[in-house]
Length: 224
Ligand SMILES: [Zn+2]
Image (cartoon, rainbow, N blue to C red; front, side, top):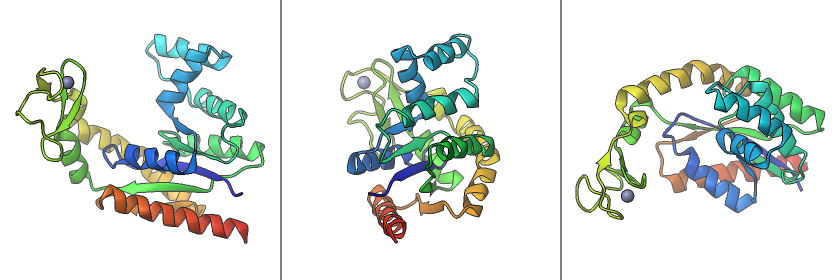
């Protein structure tokens, strides 16, 4: 059976989370979102986890190499023998080179980098419409998933607010960081023939069916 060693790329608000959930379910892949696997390592109290905790406790960024080692540890655990889905790492060419080395050392290689593309304006529209309840952080969307009563959480009656992260100016800043860091990475994967692009303005169902079709083609190619 061929492996599905996948990286998910795309701006915040492109719907990566939805696609990731389906991919993980359908193909039984372990999902490695940077924040999650760091927290897991900390919870499990591994050596790497303890080192990572030190950085997090001091409010410092966890160094790339440490993240890469945490990923490598998971690759060696057996759970990712048939593939994995990485989200949030790599973000830069340096990180992508680290991942490439880690895979190479294990006689493996990336199957594809899946890029979900969405225009900046669409991202701003999607994210800045989010409202979160003060009590339990239930999430709504003014346009796509409004509460029954404006400004009030359906589930606990608490007030709905816009998180600072979801304000248009903050979203535009995050997008500009994304473009600065990730545009070179997209070219890098493109040059290696690993990049597959998907139109994130389509419905989540349509995006997913295209991703599935692409993975099916890649699996056939791997068998030839
Ligand atoms: Zn609520």
